[in-house]
Length: 344
Ligand code: PHE
Image (cartoon, rainbow, N blue to C red; front, side):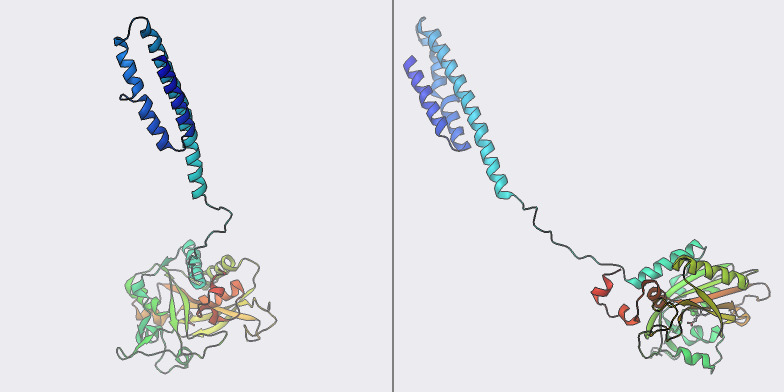
């Protein structure tokens, strides 16, 4: 019996030695250590042995079972590591490969400028006009008549725009100034709003002009508003938008809906005032028109010009963007060339 046990141990050790996978070790475990194994059977039948043999066989059987268990566990551990390593090697990722770049969209430079300017004016106490007061498809009344343009005034020629066929006198607005009238019709002073949006003009397209562009309109109406408020507000705006270094100038001008009127120019960024293609050799670029709201406009919307005064301004978003980033052709904004757009 002892011989038989020793032989069994030897046999088990050989099998463990030869095992190459966890399937093999599992099989060995079943064969030698399970309840149905021969070794277990021997342990259970110790009672049938005589008193002299019983402790010897029992001790050896236990010893062998323990030995097999220990060696088998070691082997199992070894095989587990080996299989794990193989798997890791197979699934390994080469972290030195360059990653795939997923292209992300960007905010269009014009939208950026609109957002930036909106924030500056919000900081100065302005709020954004309700979009219903600033439609792109507008009537001749709000685009011209209510803004004090006499029917055949030459000022209308400078804003020749596109008329639609949806109804008589319905056009694509040539300026955001209609928003002034609509706002004053719907809101009592004090008023302090800005209104960004698209405008259209029948222009021949060039480096400076496009027939679609963007403006930001501003309107303040309250008691005791003077030209000093206008100048202070717009100087503060140019200071924040450009930084103190950029020279600006106020020039007298004419708009039917403001009196007096002014145009504000910023020194041309391309030539630093020397004169170039971008600034039509003048050294200056007009960025906005402004003025005190004409009493006729106030009367037209039922605001008493003896009690209230106000100022308004309208600025070109393309022009302001070109100045800030030294862009020399307005058409770049509309060509959708990603090589240009990616730079912002
Ligand atoms: N609407 C004018 C333009 O398009 C600009 C302007 C706005 C001037 C408000 C004065 C007041 O040229």
